[in-house]
Length: 130
Length: 224
Length: 235
Image 1 (cartoon, rainbow over the protein chains, first blue to last red):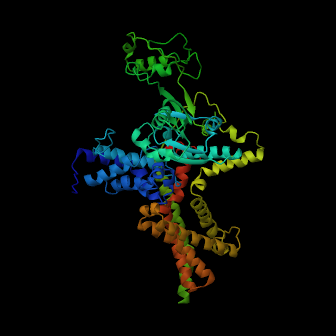
Image 2 (tube, rainbow over the protein chains, first blue to last red; image 1 turned 90 degrees about the horizontal axis):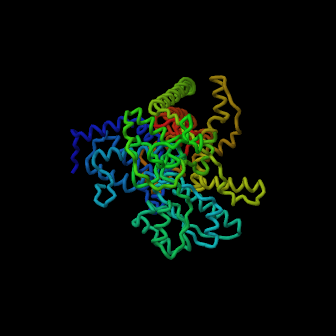
Image 3 (tube, each protein chain N blue to C red; image 1 turned 30 degrees about the vertical axis):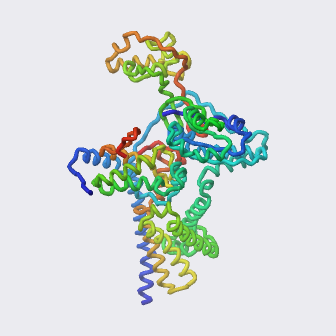
């Protein structure tokens, strides 16, 4: 199922969020050297046996990076995947360290607000979407 | 979020000096955000403690694990195996986390590494200000979004005492603004002064003015 | 053939080099403008009411002579940086970034050329040392490559671009090494060296190598936990 609904009120809001944050997203994604040094500073990475999908830059690139590249026009399944990545694998403690100086939390929080527009968020009662 | 400050190293060392296998459990929630109990701070704590121990000529095993949240049973279960292998636990969570950890692993001594300070906002990096005393009876709706319980030195609910200085500061200190002066000014600007006319029943609180603190090691940023 | 080589050589070393520097400068300027546009100033006028400085770590230094105090605090300070958490990567990348700047700038051959074309020259370091530096850079590039291939966390992040960039950085040094020792065809190596070096210079602001200018913006001007100077801008 790869249905992309473009004519949606949510899509308009997503476009707005993307255009608001366009500069930081573009600059950060292009400056990231994929060195993975940020993984050491992520406590979730350390407490999950160094699972590479917990690397902060991986989470940022595969959430906001994917959304940004397609300007938000990705399928609902993909949004769900992204939601899983940024809600279950990141607590947004804002403590990731980037040697280049990229602010990863800003990227992930942008991805989170886009996912919220799509109705994908964490509910903390076990009945959540993500 | 909850803001905490690390205890002096002496105090932590004195609590754990008789143990040889120590588990440091960090918390990935509030105390991570306030730069007191995340991955990095927990590691720094173990490094400093092992330096203390090695100065005394002792060899001590440290393990570090940061849970997602220490106030949640699901996440605390992650460390069950590690707890068995250690003599004592140091928790860098807030008071809630320490107590929950102690309750969950009753046979192990659990020590706090932080002093839980208050619920506050982030003014700047590592600079926090108290904003809520969790009194359980929020009055912000009629006080123009300024909490008299937290921000007034006497936690008065029905207007200021007579200690307000001419410049709008509190009699406690010139650095502390009078909360009721601020409430009055804001409500006046919003044309809502009738909000504070009805008498509010008293609450039993013993409090001081709004507190703020700087995380250790970040003082340099705010040197006047 | 040989006239063609000398013509090409002098064009590449003169105007094309200047052009590549201009592209580099223009690209950096573009990045600076972008940065200024996408960030905004924050004026935090909030000051803490009281600012007591407490020595929480006094126990570490009690009854210690001065020099040992410095030593202990330095040791603990280093431990909490990348040199403590990931010392190999920390040292290797620090050495790499210093050498990649020092080697081309203080090489005698480059300085002779720049003296010839522009009348500017800096002090130079001995060629034997430079030879060693070049070998170091190539080895570290290979280390980065192996890391990219072998370490799961880096492999997961790597794209084809990352390998290209690494290659782009490596080629000028490998060809320079070959040209210096005249291992293969000297002229071919030299031309490859010049062209690839100029492409690398031009690529800096527009590719992942853009972390060179980006680092300065973000570490010096953005307000954040890890910046080197408390900045007053935010995204």
